[in-house]
Image (cartoon, rainbow, N blue to C red; front, side, top):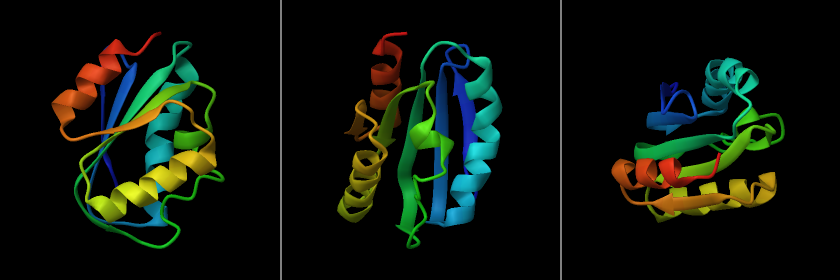
Length: 121
């Protein structure tokens, strides 16, 4: 299911919420929603990806090769929320392949927002 995308903190934080099964088209849809905001900001944006209600990832769903979420110069940090052990392992692999050096996992959305607000701008 495509992400629900919410922006907060003057557009410096994007919260992406997924449910059901995540497929490759979902990352393309998310890129299209987030791209205009990434291009308009000069400050690093923090991306919060909420895996709490996600049941599974389809093979290749989080392809980082062409995804803005993992490769754009204005991404300051990626914070993953929740998710079971398998989802976290896949997300961790994606972050490592993308080269993003500022990524972490937290258990709740509140913790993610706290961490995102503390990110340097």
